[in-house]
Length: 156
Ligand SMILES: [Zn+2]
Image (tube, rainbow, N blue to C red):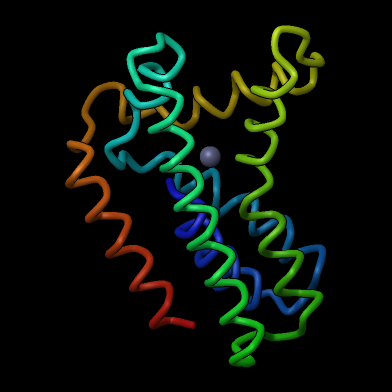
C-alpha cells in the first residue's frame, strides 16, 4: 500500500499501545497486514522491474506518496494528534520501514546485502499472497486505499 496509508495505520495502532517499542512492532505488523490485502498494485512492481513502467512514472508516484506522507506527519505533530512524540515516531518508523528497506534494496542492486535480499523476497511474497490470485484494478485499489486512509484518520 501507499506509505500514507501505512503511516496513518501505524500511528493509529502505535498510539493504542502507548509504548515506543510496542508501537514500533505494531507499526511493522500493521504494514505486513495491510500489504496482504489486495490493493491494485500487485503488477506495478513487476512492470517496473520488466521496464514496462517508466522510471519517470514510478518516481513520480513514489514522490507524490512520500510528499503526502510528510504532510500527514507534519499535521499529526502540529495538530497535537499523538500519544507522545516518541511513541508516535516509533510507530511511524515501524509502519514505513519495510518499504524503506525495499528502497535500500533497489539502490544497492546488483550487490544487495543478503539481509536486504531476504527482506525483499519475503516482502513481496507477503504483498502478493492474495493479490496474485485476484487483485483490484489500479483505480479501484487506489479508491480502497483512500477509504482505508479516511477510516484511520477518523479513528485518530
Ligand atoms: Zn510494503
